[in-house]
Length: 548
Ligand SMILES: Cc1cc2nc3c(=O)[nH]c(=O)nc-3n(C[C@H](O)[C@H](O)[C@H](O)COP(=O)(O)OP(=O)(O)OC[C@H]3O[C@@H](n4cnc5c(N)ncnc54)[C@H](O)[C@@H]3O)c2cc1C
Image (cartoon, rainbow, N blue to C red; front, side, top):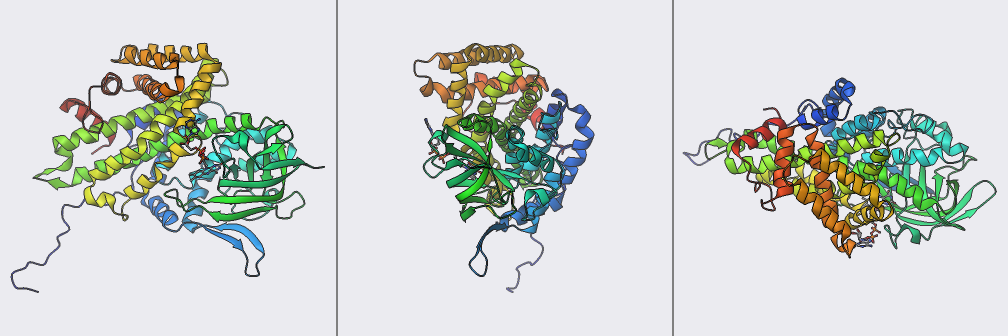
């Protein structure tokens, strides 16, 4: 050691570990949304849930599940097919927790009827908190919940499966579903030649004495360890939804072969398989030829989950940025006191406020859809719009939050790289950006009056906010365009912003006003920190975003 060089602890000015976070109590936007959407009776249980999932132990399970991705066991030692997937114990732990909390089924009764309000809002709150911790294991939660309605419409065996879905019991055993205490359901639609144009599916379904025989492939099928899969296949009358169980009714292993697991950018804790059906047994769900409708009903739920998941990712990234900047000093002040950093953080906080308000108001619409035609139309119109806007915003949002942590943000020891890798997939699966915009146009085409009534309702709810009139006019102009597809992205983006402003209007008025002024009226730049918020407005947003 050279003389004169001091040796000491130079680890000052690093933010402390961000563990044991209360995911409910520290999140004012979430609490406001729960109240605004009539789920206040759930608050106590949501608070306990937020503490449980915010515990450092859960964050560690999330890390381990992603650093130890699943492995396909295609064959056994003698070359016989196994087609099972091996997961890290932490993945199993996360699934056990989420299934124990009914994330896969709480919006359904045991007979497959929709559960009473506020089931959707309460689940969205839990889903949003879990998404802040780990997203990969949510895949079977999403598909299982979406599969319940088609199962209820299926033959007796399929309807019987619902009883196993709603047990809240995680049973990873490789056994026939009848012998298990709890089951999950996957979904196989996408094929090599196309995922969007599902009518072009080449997987065949041939009727047999007791069901159907399925032959063909699926290029993506997530959660391959599930007990059964809703699959789209071509039958005589056209695309048909079938339910392919892992085991045939006689107890033998069904002819489902996994070719390999995808090597994914993110979502690494979860398995997504390429699969061949080699004469697999299946039951039909619904009528022959009506499979596209079944799939579209399922993706309405899965798309809503994508929007909630992206809102959760954004919240997690924001919390990391706030925590770090409140502890890190530069030029003699904390980063969170530097005006330019405050402008960035406040803009990020405003985006999360809007995303949260939008997805929880949408969950309320799902809750009310059974009794209100207007709410049903909101679900139909605003689910793709919310997914479009929030899932598209998330990757850039997480990158900005990452930058708030400087170099540490880019390093795999922290959580930001995982959030960043996770963010894009919600925009791609369950209907990519263009596809969900086309879905909005399709709804407009079929239900023009009802769509315009939703827009009018949103306009009325947000009528006192700046920029609303111009936003409504631009949505309508785009809807009236001679080339609606060319204008669709703008229309859907503006529609989502309008819906977010209206949703914010029901909770915190100052936030609604700031959102409308900066996002509807515009005038700011393209990146966070360019909205021109005043110091008082910035303070309001940052105080709400997370207690000091
Ligand atoms: C991690 C992961 C897991 C997945 N898990 C599953 C699963 O469990 N089950 C399942 O069935 N699928 C799954 N998928 C597949 C996913 O749903 C599809 O990748 C997605 O629907 C897009 O289909 P595609 O890949 O065939 O793209 P394509 O259909 O080829 O689309 C490519 C691009 O073209 C755009 N496009 C399509 N049509 C139009 C049009 N008319 N005008 C303008 N643009 C258009 C799309 O928006 C997209 O951007 C998974 C995907 C990923 C990444």
